[in-house]
Length: 404
Image (cartoon, rainbow, N blue to C red):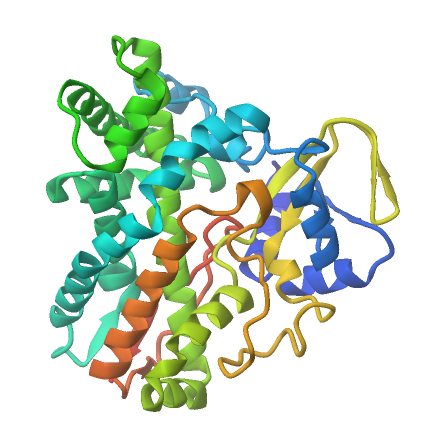
């Protein structure tokens, strides 16, 4: 991708909503060169695509914006993974890959981890509550979700920081333009994470436990011998699950707090009436969705919104655009925690709906309960303007400086 086009992509990613607005009002679908895809922006059209996985395959859901160079690819060759995962699978294979994740993130499993999540949330706030200021993304939002999904998967807390860092670096390597030396350093961090996850796969095969890692190992290997191919497949699953489990929730926490503090009356209302927290969680997820969308590819000739598409056409299915569609959500551009929550698409829809959505919601609920109770005077730092990260995958503030 040339520099000019990448600059335009950055601009689109930092604020995609004007592009969505134009696409929703255009006739048919809009082709967006920066995304190299047809933009699906209306709620009804997004739902139609997600209802028809046989016509709109997920095989390209994680196609990178930037292809790493040969030196970085050589480093990645020393790691594990690179196999299809639940996000990129279709049909029976998708159901097979998804089943152990759904079991591992069942309501009972989520309920069981909540006391630990509450304990970690309180401890993280304890660490900065007396300071009068905090950069929330690094001090809190970037830590809690990794601790929690690490607990569910069965990671030792000592391994969580390296796994979280590796997840960030994997996203950076595939979705940001980096100089060659930076690409190599990022690839080394990703491979270090993969070796940690491979160790867990081997340990759980040898000595199963009551955790999601064991569920995955059992689903892939059964009672047989753990082969090298199994190890590659398990690392791919664990890496995808962990990245989805912490980066998405980190982004959700960051955008939720940002919009509440940009609307001080809403924040004050939430502090006065904490029973509104559940509605605030849904409004935050709808208003500025952490996962803006996924790509899909047509499996044959198909017509969508009156636009005829050939086989192999790439679509960007924009959940974030659908969540601002006035046909579904009245006053869609307003952030309003008093609205009656509608059926938004922040966590997807259909067979690929996010199996970790309840865990993400609960962590944001705990966060808002903790912050409104302990720091009702919270506000955005006047001298530190907020910039959104240039990504459609985990949309969040690059940093979030707060004072009280």
